[in-house]
Image (cartoon, rainbow, N blue to C red; front, side, top):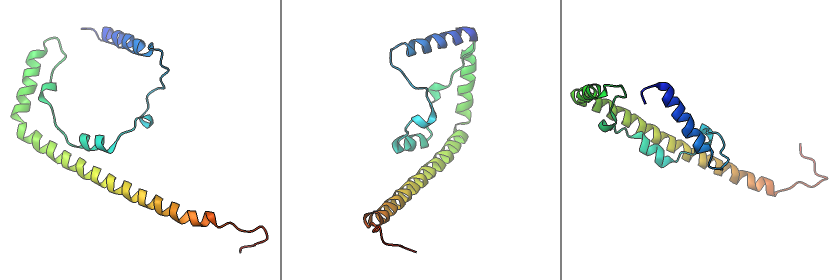
Length: 129
């Protein structure tokens, strides 16, 4: 595919075929994608893959070679940046886990304190001020 219009048509055909399987699918939204803590922890560590560096242009091989040469030359710098970002991500995930534990503990405390109040019922003639 050399023309963007061809790519657009191919994408539309693929999307139409995916929708023709007879399953009624709801539209995708961020709220309907459950993300587990394990996934967040895996995503926190940045591991760039040099094999994913390529060019989609007509004469892409020289451009890809240039990109890979730049990555090789800047390896130490990119490694330091990736390490700093990974550390930040890991600390952020740790903080999120701590906050989730705190929220869970507070919810348990609230539900435990509301259970005795719910079990004691007032009599119809009682007035509380």
